[in-house]
Image (tube, rainbow, N blue to C red; front, side, top):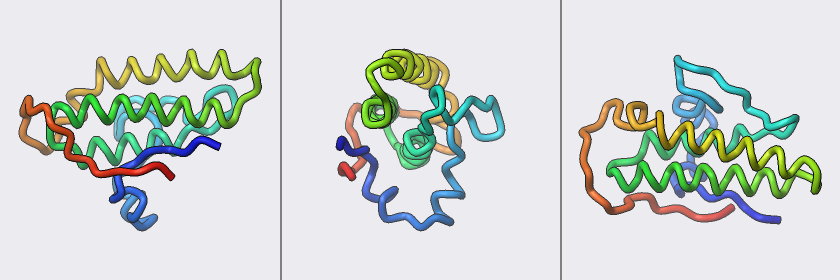
Length: 127
């Protein structure tokens, strides 16, 4: 069984702390998108992505958060799909990744100073 990757602060956070930051898929207070891919719940990948957007400090963190989002989506799909549903769910995962990579920058920089530093500040692990 493959595991998800997240910052250690996410794994150690309380439910209350996660609820304050994480809202599933889609922008908080904005566009809502399904938390499922053809019946498979992918909310945890979206919550981890929300957390990484909140904690990120650099442009590299933005890129890394999106890459980890795609990785976690793929892990959930591979773990929870058969040969038939896997194809459709992985295609949907790529669309979600493209959406955050292209349109997510404004949401990432809310309440933080924009910078172009290329260092990753997250300390994380697979669980």
